[in-house]
Length: 305
Image (cartoon, rainbow, N blue to C red; front, side):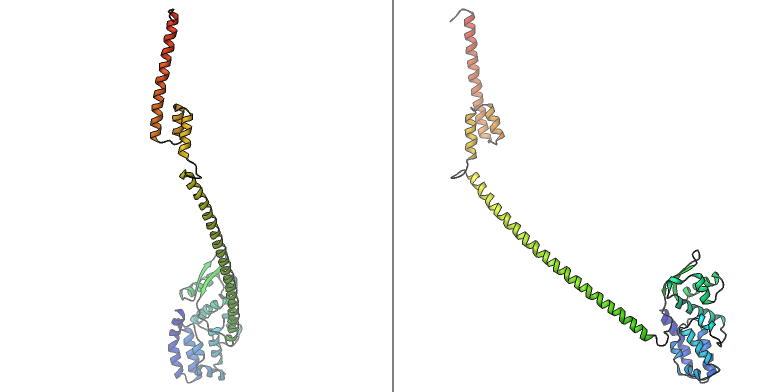
């Protein structure tokens, strides 16, 4: 967005290059373009034939060099190179802002002292005002740290032109980056293939284990099923559980112990009723014997037979 805004701001000056037929007019166009607001990209203006013609003019060649500094140079280059035209306040502010963009490429060394030296500023307040103006112009996203005397830059707008012969170096850097990405992708594909193969192997082993467990369970259930059917059938080769309970009841004499025992062993209600009737008869018989014994003792005391 900021790049589009800067290109739109430069359009009127590109149109005026067609009428800048003299070196003086071309030099004046450079001064106006570098002083205008929102003009931060100058590569198209620098490549115009009328501007390039200044290289053959000894009086205005410095203006061509000045435009190159605004395009991809720094404030330090301007101050260390003699013979440049004097800049007005607007041009000085813009050149410092553009220089700050270049310095922000190295965010680990943005101390107040280094920036003040590189930008020709004398006080921390001047530096803070410059950074704030760059932030409001959309050039950078940054925060000031007056306590630690640091400027923290989080993003920089692409508003600086490339230096001549810098494209081959960029292509080489991009080729190296592309090679590293390709190597990383190959390693990832190998790891993915290894993980998939391991997962398939574990799945096969799990399926085989489940089949073996199911087979063992089926065999065990078949054996237990045959054993239970022989126990519950009571037929040939089986065990008659009801007959065992019945014979145990008869051996116990059909008394209260038999009733409790058969109740604990699960004898049904009909059998329990029978055992209760037997208990009643036993009680009557016991009661009769006790009465006859008592009568005999009584007759003995009275002198009877």
